Image (cartoon, rainbow, N blue to C red; front, side):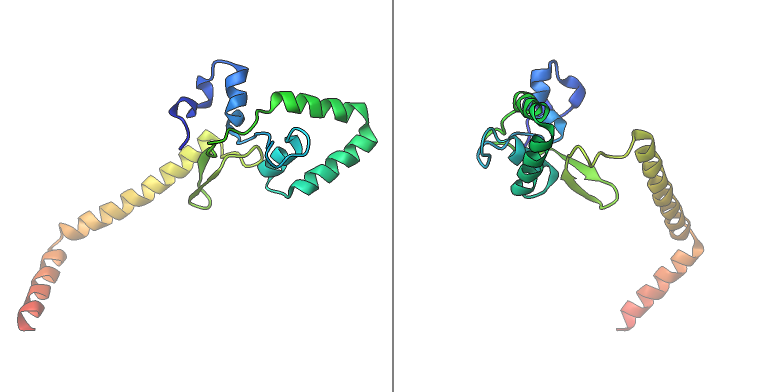
Length: 156
């Protein structure tokens, strides 16, 4: 379970707190599986790819970009926190799949206005079904169907 202290992004008081909670995107260095500081392994975990893929891409960029890529790695080492030992990923509800999934930088939830429209649409649908049910239950047809059902039970 995640800590209640970290349940809302806007409650963070400092950059350090956001860093320690993976920026609410489950972004941590993976020093357990990492070769140097765990930056590539952490990015691979975050992106859902094998560690070697990110390492190969990093080495290719390092060869082409030289010192800039090296300094970017150092900055990432500082900016991305080491994954805590008792870390649990932060989840959010995926409306399309109707299940919870890990938060990720590349899988942001839909904007609030769109989520509100979806919720209103679902509520309108439920309301229409409840109205139909209420009309049936309060109709004379319901009473007639109920009497027929009781007669059938009595005859069996």
